[in-house]
Image (cartoon, helix red, strand yellow):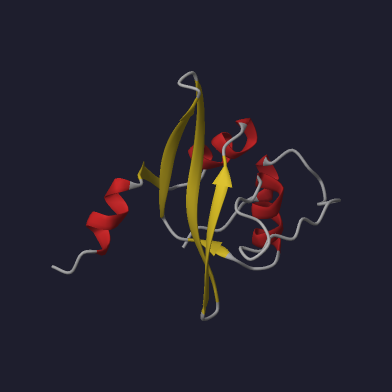
Amino acid sequence: MVSFDASNSHFQYLDVVRHWSPISQKYAGGDAVITLFSEGWRLKESVFYEEFWLSGSRLVVVYHLEMARDEDTLNVPVLSNPYVDRMMTSLPLQVRPIRERAIQRQPR
């Protein structure tokens, strides 16, 4: 599991608590991920990404995070932005294309 080190995140305290629920929102933002970290959720080492091209010219990347706390797990799709991209590159993660998730889950 990967925990988040807030010392390099350019904030002294989290002044915005951003709740996210898969029931009410399709995608989470970076602020919701930081809130989940502060609530004790940990990120699994493998993160998968999915690319969408809008109108053939604008790339949108969605990171699929799997987080765990105690016995609970949470799948969090996060829209990319410069902050989220930096988080994905600064944490010790394996960021792989979404098609590899199906391969990883196949029984051997």
